Image (cartoon, rainbow, N blue to C red; front, side, top):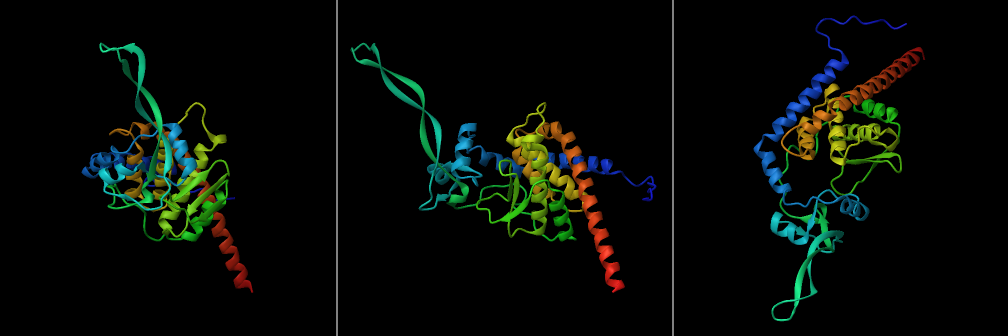
Length: 304
């Protein structure tokens, strides 16, 4: 029988600790929103088109690793970047105006010209297909540093994850992804220990909340909200284990949010808290099992 631990007045429960961490997350994101760096970031992002669902699907089908797309001239004029020679463009559908002759005549007896709305195929390129000055960004592009007991935490995450986790050389800017179709998580190889752990948790959060069989039909969310939730869960869990991803996570969440408020984040906070709590419980159990195995192995070694 396990011994029940008596909590001192200063000892906080896991739920209290997670509530504190998610409050820190909200405050951290607010700080990013108010910074001059974020204003520069938004100004830059305003020069990119907001693609429709159909165009987003077209981009994903042709170039799955794409993260930021624009036309050849837009890259050159707006951002000072050059599309590399030989790069294959990504075709999307763009609105356009075209002129047609009508049956009506003008005062000179000529057909009147009418302007109508239509669509045409245009070519875009992902930022990974271009060279040039870096775009304004908030936070850091990648977390650095080692993690204490990295292998144990890595093994615990692998053990509790309902789908297999693979490490591969992912092209483009993505550091990992969860495939609902293939039921697997893929993490980019050769990243720092800190970035690897954070990315694993982020993609596991996607599986937990956003896999088809786990979707809440009463709470349908778009892609942006899914990213906000997954990264918020990753931040909360990392923080719980003493891993600080704030420079990366705060800016990541702010970059995905629309407008200068945290409305989207607030709407998801309870889901974030609940999922983080469940995942931490599972991670702790796995870590305890590893500790017990190590102790038993030590006892066996001593007995030899």
